[in-house]
Length: 376
Image (cartoon, rainbow, N blue to C red; front, top):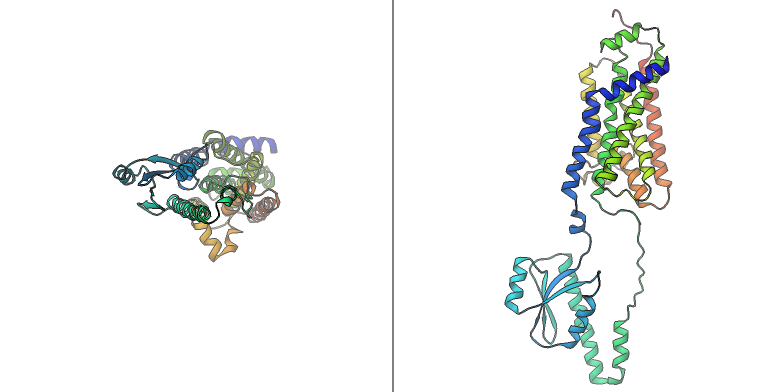
C-alpha cells in the first residue's frame, strides 16, 4: 500500500506543470541568462592582466630600456609597451588602447586619462623607477666601486611579506548568483510540499475528498507523499546542479559531490516548509500557493538573488536573519565548501538544514492530522 502510494506521488509530481516550469525549465533559462551576463566579467573587472602603455622617449635612456624589457617578458608580464611619438601616444590614450603614457626625460613621468587600478600600478612603477634611478646616479657620483652591489641589491626580489592565499577555491564573486539560483530551486520545493497537504484536504481538492474516504491510513498517505516529494525535488536539485556544473561550467571547486549533498538537503528543507504552509487551516488553495511563492521569493531576495549587496546589508544590520533564512543557509553551505579547507562551517549549515526540515515536517504533520469535515 505504501509503495503504491509512493509511486503514484512520484508520477504525479513529475507530471505537475508547476514542477516542470518552476523547478526544471525556469532555473535552466535563468542560469543561462546569468552565464551570458556574467561570463568573463570577473576576469575583466577584477582579475589582473598585463597593462598596455606607451613610452615617449624625449631622451635616450638605456637603463629604462633594460627595466622595461624585464617587466614585459613572459606570460605574466606587468607591462605591454609601445614606443611612439607624443602625438601618436596621446591618440592611443584617447582611443583607450593604452592606460598611460611614460615620458623618458631626466625623470620618468606619467600621463593618464582616468583613475583606476592599472593607472595606479603605472604610477607606482614610475615612482619606484625614479627612486632607484636616483640611488644609482648618486652611487656613480660618490662611490662608483659600489655600483654593482647597489644594482644587485635593487634587482633582488627581497620582501618581508610572503604571499599566502586565503583560499584555494573560486574567488569569483559572481558565482554567488549561481549559488542563489540553486537556493531558489530549493525554496521552490515549497510547491511540491504544498501539493502533499492540498491533496489530502477534502475542502481543497476532489483528490483530498477521495483520500479522506479511503481506508488507507492518513499517516501512510502523508509519509508516501513526503517521500515522493523529496525524491521529485531531489531530481530537480540534481538537474540544476548538473546543468550549472557541466553545461554552464560554473566552478564549484574540487568537492562537487558535497555540493549535491547540500543541494539535496536544501530541497528537502524547501519541501518541508511547503508541507507546513499547506497544513495551515482556513486558507484556500490559491492563498497557500501565493503565500508559498511570496515566502520563497522573500528568502531568495534577502539572500542576494536579485541584488547581490542585499546579503551583506542584512549581515550588517540583522546578522541573525542570515542564520535562519533557508535560502541564505543553502548559499552559505556552497560558499564555505568552496573557500574553507575544512568542513566545520559547512557541516554546521547541513545540520541547520536538517533541523529546519525536521521541525517544519513535524509541525506540518501535527497540523494535518485529525481534520474532520461536516460533509464531503
